[in-house]
Image (cartoon, rainbow, N blue to C red; front, side):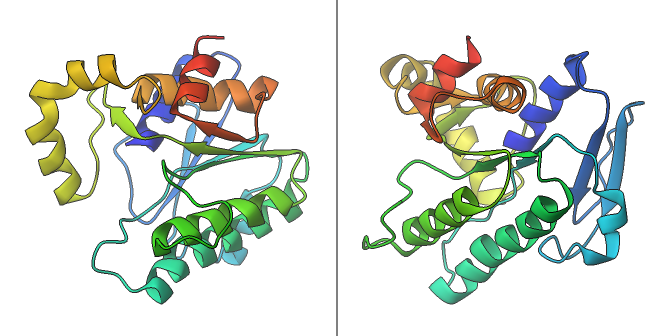
Length: 212
């Protein structure tokens, strides 16, 4: 859903010349400045690395829920996959800005009780050590879809359906913990183009950056 939001902002921005979508399945996006690579193993990009050079930014929006998953399996999908892809991109594009979508509650100390938060924190820390021009960690809480964006996970779709009547109240009560797909997409694009005041941005920081 976040990826859909930032893609919309990239399509609307005349400064963005080329967009390369990399995913496990094809999308229905048909625009002149979009190219697409369908690749089953996002963590291993060596077979397609000839197509990955000369890009200014990467918006890494892939993620899964840890529900019902062991820490080992969640780490493989969340940490290993992300760092594998980022390592290839850092080698090919040292002037790239890398933006990673993490989540509210991520544990940057890597020592907390929650396994998913530790794994996310370890992923963030590893990315911040990589030789990119810049790297920013986005930690949104609740995200309101604004332009028809939909989460892929069935459980998330059900949750959004149940919460829909309460969304205006959630947005009014929790500006520090809530954002929208439009705001987060705009903030990611601004961070890529001009930088951001912090390396780790919570919802309030995302909202502030998006209006700058």
